[in-house]
Length: 130
Image (cartoon, rainbow, N blue to C red; front, top):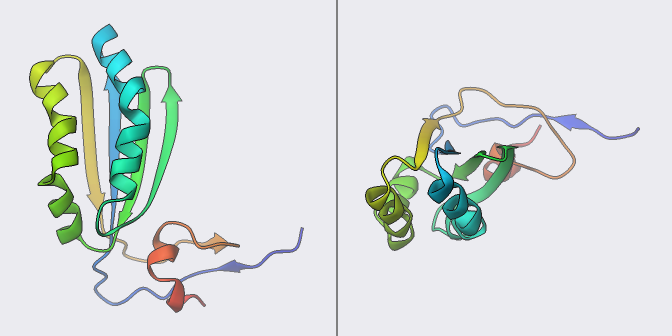
């Protein structure tokens, strides 16, 4: 196998953030809502201003996790104030016990390792590859 491994030189104080967002269904209503809306949620997030990439993974039939990469925390917060996020939260307000939701925001402190096409933070800082 012939490919190169590379890192990126992060700025001293990177603005970019990674957002981890999980959905765990707690009942039948939440299960059907999650699977019906998952593609739309991923698409709405991926096309939001400041979002560079979204990765989604199935943990099991009742749990999904998404990781999105944002140019800045400000862009992520603007997404939370937008129509797409409001629509997502409408279900939670009407069915507060149907989903277990969790989210965490991370700012990179050092480079990961990458091969081939830039993914994740490397998409944000591709010009800084070493």
